[in-house]
Length: 221
Image (cartoon, rainbow, N blue to C red):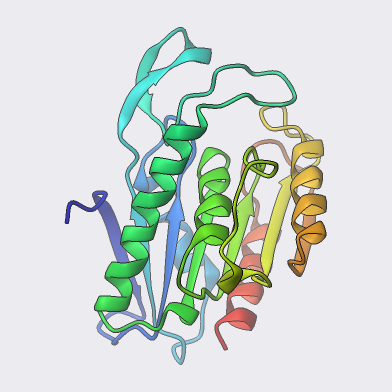
């Protein structure tokens, strides 16, 4: 099996993980983008977690004049609807499924695996989490959106998966309305969601990191 290349961090170091977080970066970034957040989460030593930060492949991106950059899928239009290449998004979700299966093979119960993603990565993890054939602990969508909300065929095993949604109120890249629409769509599908907004743009703030830490400890307890 060819897995996505990734950075892996274990906290606390040297402990056998009892949970995993697979965290996808946004457009044009790589797995290093959120690795530095792990120490800031200040997770308890009683909750050893393996963090997996995959690198997206480099592909041409239409909205950037076809420039080749790390991306989970092509974005065809930057209008409020965010028209994307769904086939590429679904392939990226399948690559995430492979990482989930690898974590299970390494001894982590699937119900102690969280999927997380920022921006474009968040769109992929929402699709991956809801279509996963294994029960998961939860999903985090950060400054993101849900482009496959109307076309997705969810797996019943994750029908009530908890989802954390975080978004900046001044986001000029992914308007907050898209985060709110994702929250609405997920609630309509029966998912218990927690929505947090922050006075920030397309980024991450300390208050958000604290909320992420508290939510991780809740779903992985």
